Image (tube, rainbow, N blue to C red):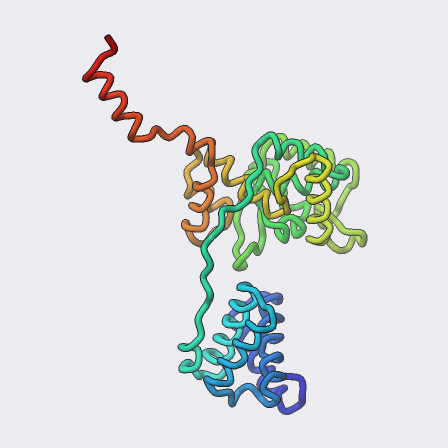
Length: 291
């Protein structure tokens, strides 16, 4: 949607997304998809037929797009045709791809301790400790401000997390001590973890690189990324018998099913569950006591 004839349509779509408060990243992705659709068709996409949309989805799939790219395409097409064009009939023939959910990589408490200890510098040790200690996403960590740390109530305020939702998470005493050490060393004023330009926060790329470097230094052989710290946080809480609904709130999950996935990797919890076979064996011993 780059030519002048397309600009009113593009403007209307942007307005529709703004009304629904879609995030800037989502808006950019949707606009990019519709621009690609227009380029594929060689004309304005508002007159596209079902076969045109089907052909475009096939083009995306054949271009090497993975499940994520295909689902992002479907989401953008559905918004464009249902909301902006009011042509819902077309989207009835689009479908999201559902892949089997794989178990997330989870670090053991010992591995987690080694990773944090190997962080490249105080700044990254503090940031990675926040990510693990409060179960925050990368974008939530870098968006923290000094004022978000509430030492009186021992909470961290997470503003505009995924889905544009605010939430509070716990602030442990040891994490507070580490953050105070970081503050005394760097004296950050706005962003808790400023980037190279103090007026801007650290980037997620910087944080991910620090996490990868720490995992390598700690000689952890698992595939570790910053996102690994969230399922590790959730799994370790489950192994401490924290209610899964509490963990759901801490993680900011909209659906309990998402949080419940971590119960499948809580190895300590699994190993402590008594098999029904064990109950039968105990009953057999009662019936036939050893001679």
